[in-house]
Image (cartoon, chains in turn orange, yellow):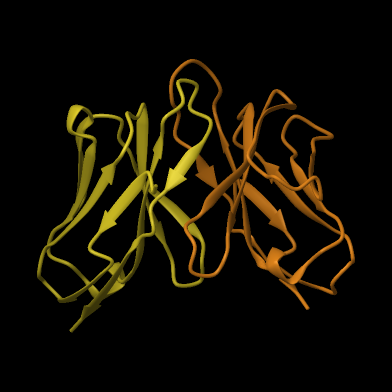
Length: 114
Length: 110
């Protein structure tokens, strides 16, 4: 059974619309993250959450808003979509505590903005 | 500048040959991970290796913190090893933000 679920797998949106990307993890982790992989760019960190609180935000645009309704959920709301937002969005999770921990990644949501 | 440099950018091997992938970091790091990205895009964690050497089957990862580098050795490569290999570092003390390299694209042929 998949331990990190991302929905939907593929998403097509029109410019200016709003979409929500879903992420649920069943690893019992307390930290969750969002990363983005655009064409020909390295995977880049967007947000980190710990115990449902925002820890780090490396996304300049306020159009990207994480939402954590439950401890094991971290959704990503994207408003006023632009073609440049087209990318694969990965959710990840890890145990929380002092020092580094291995991060586990979901399968990704591939977003295309027309 | 780019914090994580991976080399080579691409590599072509005949099945059975060995591969050595390198990752160099421009800043001090607290931990690092190696990932395999399948052709379909999903990521598989190969190693979480903050320091020292770890082995899993035909894969060996070695991280030398003071030299700010890590390597991934693939022995006796197989066609199923083809894909993209990514290294990522975490420079934060709380392990919260991975910075990824550009990746090494590996192609193994019969």
